[in-house]
Image (tube, rainbow, N blue to C red; front, side, top):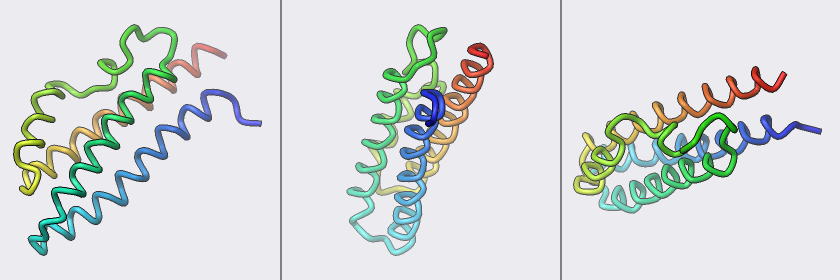
Length: 118
C-alpha cells in the first residue's frame, strides 16, 4: 500500500501528465494558427491553478503557504501576461516555464518532507 507521500507525488504527477498532453496540442494549434489554441490554453491554465491548489491539500507540514511555496517568482504577473495573450507563442513559452518551475519546487518540497519523516 503506497504511503501518503507517494500519493502526493502521484497527484502532482497527474497534473504534469495532463499538461504534457495539452502542451503537445497547444504547440500543434499554434503552428497551424488554429483558433482553438485559446481553449487549450484556458484548459492548461485551469490545470495549472488546480495543481497549485492541490498542493495546499497535500502540503508538507513545514510549509506555511504551499501555493506560494511552489508558485514561481512573479507567478501572478506572468499568469496575467498569459491570459492577455493566449493565442501567442510567447504566452505558451511562459506557461511552460511556470509549469516547470512549480513542478520542480513541489517535488523538491515533497522529497524534503519525505526525508524529514524518516
